[in-house]
Amino acid sequence: MLALASCTVSQAATQPEGFIEDSSLSVLSRNFYFNRDYRKGEQSPTGKAGYAEAWAQAFIARFESGYTQGTVGFGLDVHAMLALKFDSGDGRSGGRSSFDMLPVDSDGHMASNFSKLGGALKARLFDTQIKYGDVFPATPVVHFGDSRLLPESFTGWTVENATFEGLNVQGGRLHAMSQPLSSNNRDGFSTFYAGPVDSPWLGYFGGDYQATDNLSLTLYSSRLKDAWDQYYAGASYSYPISETLTGFTSANYYKARDEGKQLLGAFDNDIWSVRAGLTYGAHTLAVSHQRNQGDDDFDYLRQSDSIYLDNSIQYSDFNSPKERSWMLRYDLDMAGYGVPGLTFMTRYGRGSGIDYSDANAVYMRRDAEGNPLDDQKRWERDIEAKYVVQGGTFKDLSLRVRQATTRATAFESDLDEVRLIVEYPLTLL
Image (cartoon, rainbow, N blue to C red):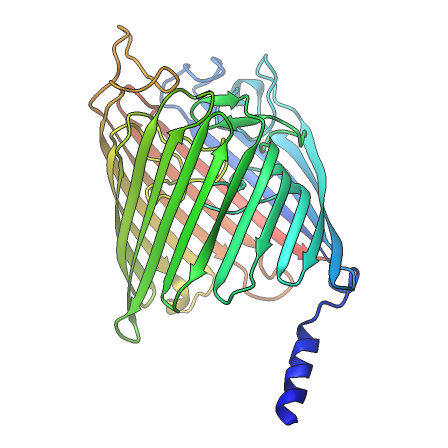
């Protein structure tokens, strides 16, 4: 009888309370300074300056309701976002490059502000949630990007199920996207290396399984209609060696091949990465290797985070045809030295063997004489420091400094980057 009463109380405690009772309202303030030096004097994407520079402020408000009572509950998610320019001259706007801080017109003039507004209807049946509208999927094959002022979003429906312990299953069908610079939630699809793609929809399905406390497995597939099929498999494992020493390893694998009308040409790519490392107290050291065995760039949705490869870092993805890359990374958590909230990271990656000789017409890169580029190389070094306030009035305020230096042969740009990001999340409801 006591056990039955306990179970009843536990179930009641986990039952949702209602549409209003379980709702939340938050606002994220994001201040962002971005400087990208192209290392080529006056030759920049705008043709007016040798660097791109912008300082801007964003406010990202999100309302997430609970669900109505009943076997099938209904709810609503709404977001409103605003970006304001503080400083950036037209000659420093970055043009139509991947700088992507604020919208830029055909004359290189940067907008003083822009905004996004959207929402999604949602329903819950037992352990299954369905959303339709403007959504933010987070999977290895479709993952919204959040590396600029405002996050990327998609339009369509998604479904998520967590019936079985340790297993989370997701799927969806999307028919539009909104990149970080767009106020329109109904833009067409665009990939990072090939640009706009006239594809009617993007579908995905897969799951994440926490097999044990130390082992996790992931399996997903996606189809960008008439462009590609992508398949992803991943695994990660950690193993405590002692109270202060832990080893870890992970592997990621993608297979991408053309589909339907072959809007991105014919291709069949395999790319993978493996990583191993140790954490000792406040210190973490890891080494990773990555290899693209295909003849074309491994492509993904523009400005998204849909590339779960160990050597995909601040600027470089190390995903060019036949590219082989190594990376060494070191992290330091200053909590172990009496400064909780302060962390440091540095990494160095080097890629070689890049060869466009057999690339299709969409991804082909040639030299000045028209010959396919081969024997290309690059390297990138990143340094990052971040501090998160641990308590008091400004609890969770974060200050982040990111610096990147990359150098490459003819196929890619040399550049230096500095990003300063200050974020302050407020929970209003």
